[in-house]
Structures are given as structure tokens and as C-alpha cells.
Image: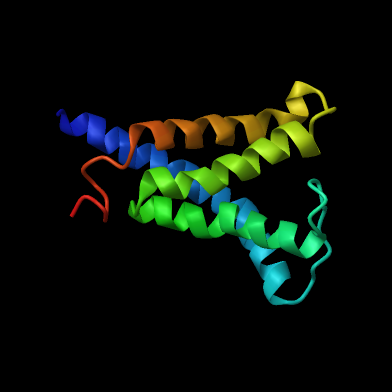
Length: 123
């Protein structure tokens, strides 16, 4: 397959995951510092919601950047962005939920397309 295609998959994985880290790392810092004040959109508890969000916004994007089990690693990020778009911002106008939707669509594309040649899993 065309090397440009594989570079495109790498570019998609790295750029969206790196941008997701800008949202997740502050949440990780709150978790590490014991600041567990976080929303509870699914009614499972704010601490559990924060931990799951950190997994979807930090741990899985890091796995996506290196290309480790990409299709599986994209699932938590898809779920977190789905909850952000349709539950947290469900009643908001499109402009407010647009960013979550963009991340959601990108992570769905990554899950469907896979890692490509330039990934740890491919080695």
C-alpha cells in the first residue's frame, strides 16, 4: 500500500491524540493531587468518572500515539467523547459540543482504519 496512506494514519493518530492530551493531562494532575471534584454524567460517582475520563483522555491517546493495539485503544476515547458530546453537552448548541464531536469522529476513523505500518503493533 502507498506509504502516504500509512503516513496519513500516523498523522491522524498522533495529532488527534496529542491534542486530546491537552484536555486529559490537567484531569490527570487533579487525580494525582487528590482533587476528585469532577462531574458525574452517568451516575457512577465522580471519582470513577474522573478515572475513566483520564483513561480515555490520557492513557489511550498515549497508546494511540505509539500505535499499540490501536483499534482497541481507541474505544475508551470514543466512549469518553460520546459521553461528552451527547450527555454532558447534550442540550447545548452544536457550537458547544462540536469539539467533542470532532474528537469522536477522529477516534472512530482511527478505530476503523487501524494503526498502519508506522506503529509499535506493526513491528
